[in-house]
Image 1 (cartoon, one colour):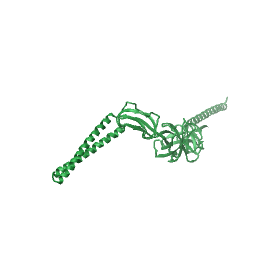
Image 2: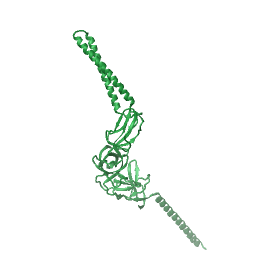
Image 3: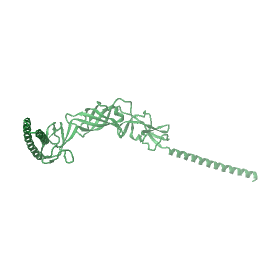
Length: 375
């Protein structure tokens, strides 16, 4: 084989080897590019999206509340002694001024007898001093006694008069204490507690030694305190009509109205405290019962409803994460009513957004995402 043939063969071999190397490099380059692409794709989170739903047309807000008696007070004794008899028990309806119980007060009775005797003594002394002073005034006219003696008798008469007034006041005080032997109902209502029995030692007052005898609640009119969300607070104006419903009274609605509000928003709960009064002539509404307050709302624009798991609770407020052009946009929203699993959105959305379901707390605005599907 001549040199020319050897050179041609070597050139062919080298060319084949170069082609093999080139193809290997190209394959590795393509594999690296594919791997880099797959790495980039795996770094982009895949999310599911939802769309806000139209809120159900409703013109009322349902809020929880507790029924309270319009007037609720304990009844204490004003005098000390032993319980002689009680006349009413729990559940009894009483009228203002009705006798509830009687207390025996032997010590007060004896003190009153002694005070009356002392009053008679000082009155006798006063009458004697009055006669003596009058006699001295007459003797002074004939200069049978001195001016000084006459003035002394007049001063003694004034002192005896003051002693009579003091003794009479003491008798009145003890008579008042004795009159407190009978316990009367302060207003029309229902006895909700009786904490005494016959023979029990009764101490006067409501201090540490005093004991509550009865508890009475006025149930002819009831009141309900309700917390109205800040966004709905304009509807909670005094005079606004409301309706009350109870689970134990299905189908019944009790008409009431808001009589007053606190006039300020509680910064911790962002709610307005409102008082609702309702007439209860039949007594069917019981103090302490749970009630739902149906507050009529003013006509508002269209609202949207989103699931709670689509909302981010951050320091700057409530936001939702929407997908726009493959990237995240954080949108602040204003929430109306809380339905439990869903929230009413009154501003911040137009209804056409694609919202990320269950967005992570670390999600940021502008972050690239891939949409997996729509729920």
